[in-house]
Image 1 (tube, rainbow, N blue to C red):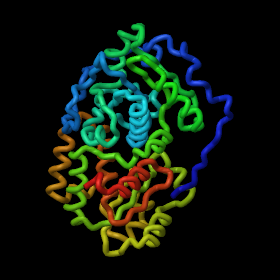
Image 2 (cartoon, helix red, strand yellow):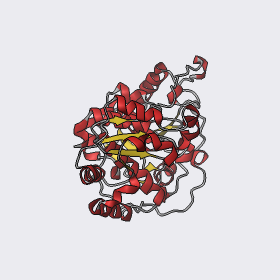
Image 3 (cartoon, rainbow, N blue to C red):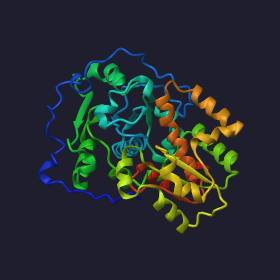
Image 4 (cartoon, helix red, strand yellow):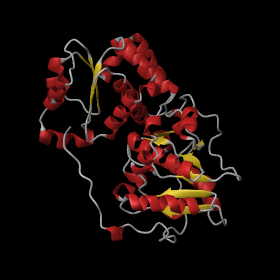
Length: 367
């Protein structure tokens, strides 16, 4: 809603052949640096959705490992793109943990243990394996720990590991022709483990495989959102997602308040007597006054007014080791609450909003 974005085509000479630069990484230490001693297992107590043992490298299985980055929605798109590549190359996908927001893979790989949660605590692996037709091997502990323990000791073993360097500018800026060439390159690799190292974030593979419709969060997170929708609104409400945070200053250059959001909501038929849920990463009453004037608004800070929802929050917080990861994971609940609304207005530039729209198109995934 704030501004339009434009795709920029880079000169073709910057799109290096995936087969080039294979001596770019002398060894794994050059990528992940020195390992800081840390407990090897995450302390999250959220229910698992996979029966697979964590951190397994089976000698008879070929694997694909990818490099996550960004907030959870970007990490989700990385996961979906990697799932497509694992599917078409007949590999089991090694799934790194969900981490709090970080800049690029170089930021993600530095996250401490307490700021990660195994991905099978956030996504419904049992469902996704069937829907995506790919085996998912979850990683517990940081990706840095996993690489140091399971890949680094065997990096010189013939036929075990290929580290596939990606474009320095990232796959997001790469042409479809380059990404198709990378896909074919992976198909031809014989190594037991292929690690896609670098700026892996891209929407291309997930769209190519038509798999974004299969996104499903864990039953625990899904039920939490259902409880909020039922207890706070009796199932009838409209919703906004307004991304400010790192885009706040740019948003306020366009408008000093949320007038445009309120105006669009009226055009979409937001009824004055239907309550509104407001999901946002930054709240100031003055900015949201145009919305507050028109509707009875509920925010995350209001949710504990329900005794039942309060119990869920207490349970949720007790299961997670770190307040940053609590906030990050609650974003998934936020998305599902917005997806359950009768009408919804989001933020154009935000992938968080786009996932909500995708969920609203595929309501059975949040039933």
